[in-house]
Length: 129
Image (cartoon, rainbow, N blue to C red; front, side, top):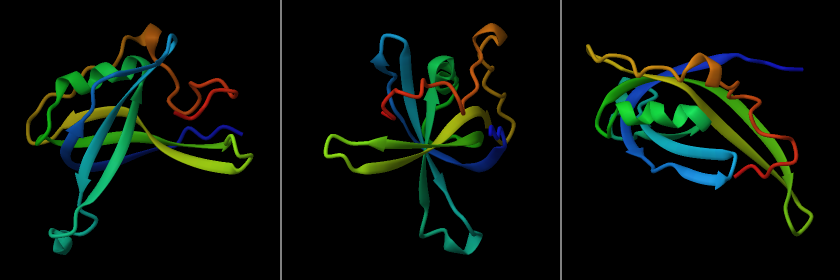
């Protein structure tokens, strides 16, 4: 079963990582968003880590730390058997788009011929990192 539901959250960019070339055919970049789940809890920010993969890495070139943005993302979850034979589970917030708020222009999407379904872009036998 495939579920392509997407979600949105707004916050302030806390950190943007450099692009990591994980394999010859796979690259990723991370975005950490400072998020407040309720206006009265301004002293207790939540830090949400999103992962941009493949051609979506360029979306993070259009924004910088301190920028208020709205992020659209999908949920991904993986099971992996580690070298000790233990099951380990990973949850990823897969970045789909990012739009600066308060008058900023949206970051351009990747070219249509290079767009990848963020929920199903890794082969099943790949490690989750």
